[in-house]
Length: 292
Image 1 (tube, rainbow, N blue to C red):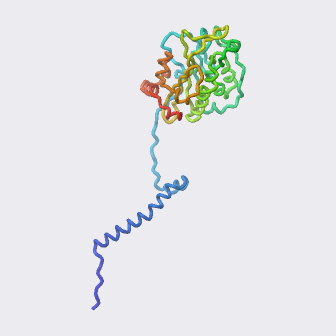
Image 2 (tube, rainbow, N blue to C red; image 1 turned 90 degrees about the vertical axis):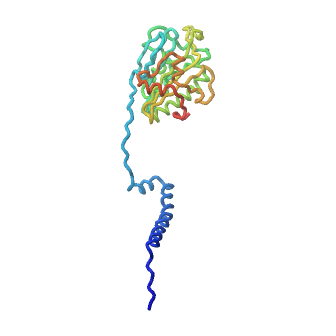
């Protein structure tokens, strides 16, 4: 009589099934890992079947309205506010320099090709005294732009306006041609990256500030610049303070909170923003957000 073959028990069958999946798992792991290491195009094909759609997450839509450009002074200020095509200026006829200059720079504006104008002229809209070229001659100071000519290449009129004496201050050559220019270059990079930014800059003076020339043009002790970005991945702002002297340290060394500039100048920036947002972005200094 032939011996009967034993049938596998349920336990043996279960173990065999389990072993099969373990072997299969180890076989497919290298394939999955390889996909992660391959090109994005191959990854896209591999994962297309399992792609999960995510709902769009809405975020606040802040706009650069005109009120954002106008700082609010906390003390009486001698000023004539002039709205030029390329910038808005608060001009001080007593000091013969601007109190501040504000403008919006967009990605599109940075792509202009208007040639630089080298001729400084009087602002035809200014009422009262103004500096002239002879005031700066042999003074040891550059005519330092507040709204730089390189940001006005999008318009012949805006380029011409950038050379008005209402837009310049006596600035140390080793500031104007070094870190002030470095910051201007960075501002254009940020405008391209974030589509549009707001810039407000100007001098810091006091009653003991020296003067140059027959027009008695006030020489600032410091300069400030504040930048606001509302169209990037997250709303952000940053401030900078430079002494009116040779500047060679890394740019991040001059970064400060906007709150500190407000205390120094008596100007309230971006006051038309919601209070919660204004307080948040003006109180912090995060140079990593600006890649400096």
